Length: 330
Image (tube, rainbow, N blue to C red):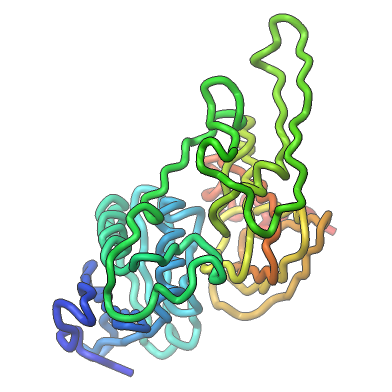
């Protein structure tokens, strides 16, 4: 459907309408509509459920546009250019692109980040938490505008320098700092390891109960750094329901399933064509190649460890094909 941008008033159902470059973003009681220019002076429109759009947008904010591509769905998304960010409609959907219905525009990262934070502040209603599982946040995303939830969308995470719990580093989670045990992990033991360091090594030897730490996660599909060793990052997370984005990798990611199970849909990153479905159960390890996009489905809250390579040069190595998109040649 082609629709002129001027069809959208300044507010709909109490929600503001926003523009970023040639993109227009509007929402109503149930849906978000995005439009962009296409061939012939027309505008292409695309509709996403409001809750799904806000969950995806929240990840773009929390992750600073993340590594590679954040597809909100098979049509609209963002690509991190590290200093700049690309917004696209239909570009990675071969049907849209081959029929002249795709559009791409690049923005300075601070400009784009400011705009999407303004959207979240205005479009997230009181009682809706874009980081929470649906059973935890209900249907507050819908209806006419009512209040806001700045506390949820402005969560601040203390960045981890080496490992949580070390002196001067991010804290471990507990009742005393606002991290109760999640309803799904009531049976997870909360004991911590005993550390007996030789004199002089007290600040060099450390350990903590990762399962206990994750059992107190207040968000889903939002990795937290728990180990930093040069460019090697351990980023565990708890997952429930659907990963709100289809993540297009720009590097290999290693997944270690720590509990329960997740089903992954794997697509070609550039065309969206299906490649595989992967069921990961507790103890399974998988490498997500640098040329795919993935989306996970977790029927109950589960624990996943994502192992990331934060080398700032690695994207160029994959793009130039100096590195193959997969870690092992069989």
